[in-house]
Length: 413
Image (cartoon, rainbow, N blue to C red):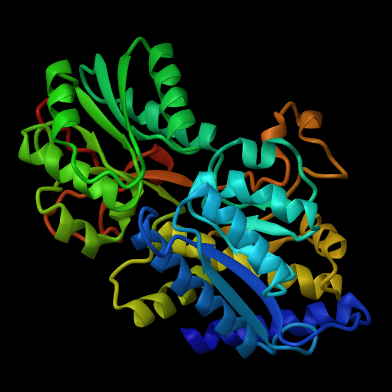
């Protein structure tokens, strides 16, 4: 599978090189930055997955001939999931490491804090997994995103919750971040529009002890729990809720998306059966050729049984920048942006385009500013672990109907 992917990339690069014209002089190797949370309080499990994916992208690009006659070096930095760290990291990647573009990014707070630094220095960024609407909402020239908008992802969450039989009240556990705060409000507003009450409990990123909050949630007697916390924090909350009798085996319970990393989830949440998880992208049986090749390479590298959506996003964020640099025939930021605005990239997650930008404002089609440089075709699904120890690749897709492979099991109903 890896050989097939490299051959496909080789052919693609060769064609692009012919259409790009004479490339401007560049320094070798061409460096592309990669941002990932590799230490606490960031989501380490997600950051490590993104790091592995970006390194696979580096290998595939170089196996296909590199860029503009140069090898590519992906310089990966640790954001720790912290805004202040992210800002300093972006500065370092640009001014010390000499990157010409940046991919990756997991936490919304990281994107919010670091985007202004890159934009001010004319360095293109394709954020992989930062959902906050404002990241693209201020229409900065050099900022792009392939993750879904927070408002869009939240609407999928609350619309699924509405399908739970007899639901009247939802408890939301969220983190005090640029992801968690707006996501909780968007979810609350959506539930209210369907006549469902919601009560929100917020915690700091990286919280480990949820005993007090679990007792407060129990006192509310919710019909469902929605977790809008990331990484190990979501594992901790889910298992502690289970220990207290309000976990995934007691009532409908949506846990954090890092539960897609099945091995880590089941080690940390042995009582996680029947948990729901939101996932970006289509199921593995519907992967395109590039997605299937990447999944095989990723599993071989990591020993995992499934590939997480944020790993695929990380891979695509580097690969699409590589294609843009080739099409631009240059590492100049303005040239890369022009290429990205007109790009059609066959990524692991599907065909990626950015229809709104300097040549077409989102308002032309009645969209808000947040659709600027935003990939509009991200697939979103809800899966459920229905067998203990199950791989996320084998979990039933229970929503929406377009991708459904099984019926949801609503415990306690």
